[in-house]
Amino acid sequence: MSRVAVVGAGIAGLAAACELARAGCAVTVLESERRPGGMIMTERRDGFVIEGGPDGFLATEPEIPELAGELGIADHLVEQNARGAFLWNGAALEPLEEGRAAALLGIDARAADVTAGFRSFAGGMGEIADALAGRLELRFTQGVTSLAPRPPGWRLAVTGGSAHDADCVVLALPAYAAGRLLEGVGVAGARALGDVPYAPSVTVSLAYRADQIEHPLEGTGFVSAPGLGVVRACTYASSKFTHRAPEGHALLRVFLEPADGDPGTLAHGALAAMLGIRGTPLWSRAFHWVRGLPRYPAHHADRVAAVRARIARLAPLAIAGAGFDGAGVSACVRSGREAARAMLRRLGH
Image (cartoon, rainbow, N blue to C red; front, side):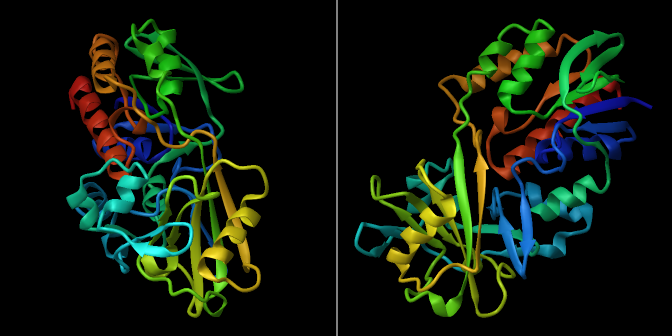
């Protein structure tokens, strides 16, 4: 039985590990954090479903529904309820052309796909990560510090001084972390992967009683015109998908520009003026991503292809994830599964 180490328990690593385990490999997932999912982070509080990372995926993309079907949770999928978005012009909210909000936020997707809407899970996007993790052997607080050839495979040094041997390795890590490990085994061009910038982000979820909000929560939310304060965008989470807030309540999710001060206070102060909110939120929850989504430099795909060509000459080794093949949830699942299938071919499965 082939021994496989998957480094990273984000959605790409979990998808790769599940594919390899289903093929009969003995798979161990090594994760430096204390939870699976990476940027998929769902919390539940007082009947609210709070997303720290992505809240859904494009309805036109088949990867998540296919995986959900394999995991037995396809019936948990929910469709987007509200449609349309608005622009805050500094004085009022004005309707935006369908798909325009995504373009203003720099979301890399075809207009037709955005227009088709999004899907999610009734219990939040954490459902897919939890379902995958429940089928795997995961070792938390096990960051990999170095990689070295150990014929016929690899030896991985793990935090704390221990080591893990494997016939095959999948590095489902951010580009800067994977690049460091690959550089350590002499892969030319690996250093360039570390040049992929990751944009920081701060989001704040705020809970209110519905009667606190004077302005109707129409559509999925709004984006702000550039230079108009601390709020970059706001999603009406409880309108966009079902089961996000108890009856008679609203859940808003704010994307903040970099600013000094408490994120919850900043977000509520801005929303109170924009939406006519009375009183204080029932609670707020801020999520800080020092390194959020990757922003690919010019010729990124060519550099990734060149690195993959070089690691193909080594013992079975693959890279996968948002830093290489697309930042969306579906793209990460596709990247992880394709990496797993490439490794299965190398292993003769």
